[in-house]
Amino acid sequence: MSKESPEFLDPIIALLESNCGVDLGDDFVSHLVSLSDVVKNDMRKFLEWDESVIHLKLHEIVTTGLDRNGRYRERPLEIAGDEHQKFSVPYIDSQCLLTEWLAIYRTLRVYIHIHNRETAA
Image (cartoon, rainbow, N blue to C red; front, side, top):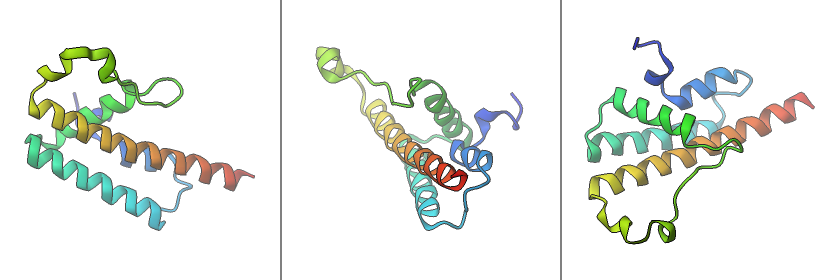
């Protein structure tokens, strides 16, 4: 895999670059990018993931963790039964951080969609 492949890019940066009509100086966009960086720093610190692992995981959750309507697919604990008690702390931490990051990504995606719709009108 080359460094140019999408798996090595921050999905939020790729999203912003693909929607060049959005003002990158917009306070809300800047805030979401900063929040994304905070979550990624937590991934580095608590999970000991390097940049390429983080971007690979984020790319994977964006491309496969969303259904066709853009909703996060998850398995509720009620369906998992007692199985949910078997997960390790690092696994639970990783799932929480990935879910937190995905919420930031989806918020930015919705904001860009609304912005593009308003400027097209």
